[in-house]
Length: 172
Image 1 (cartoon, rainbow, N blue to C red):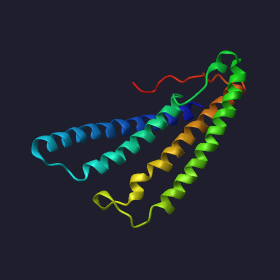
Image 2: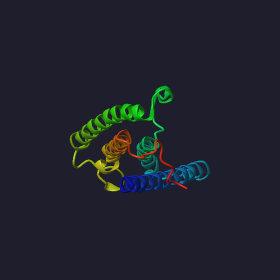
Image 3: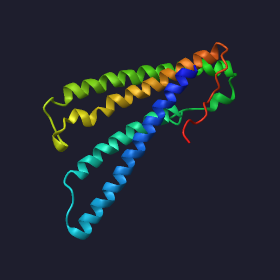
Image 4: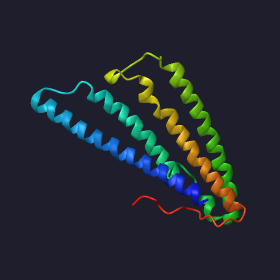
């Protein structure tokens, strides 16, 4: 379980670092565009499409981190009424269902990526559009991974393991 938690924490650190990087680029580039357009009547043509792609990436990465931190949608009124073992069992079912749904969304997103976007379609800097949209199936796959890891932790907890309900925040 320690190895699993360490691996998940590594993923969260990488995901969070990407969010910080992309948000920083978005802020600087947006500010620069405003200054250039308002004071110099000039702007970078590639900046607006890049910002749109970065919004998609930040949105999906944020959803991935929210899933790991259990900050996504949830109904917690049952948590006050159930025993710890029963709560683990309920969470196994819920997180197992969420894993399956996220996996199916991953498959559908890969289908979109390879059938909906032509192989030769390029956008900014001559890069394939598939590269810009790879975050869609990648994001759903990471969400499925985080849910699957939680299922494993709850199975361990339901079987009498010493797994705590909520892990300490790995980020400083």
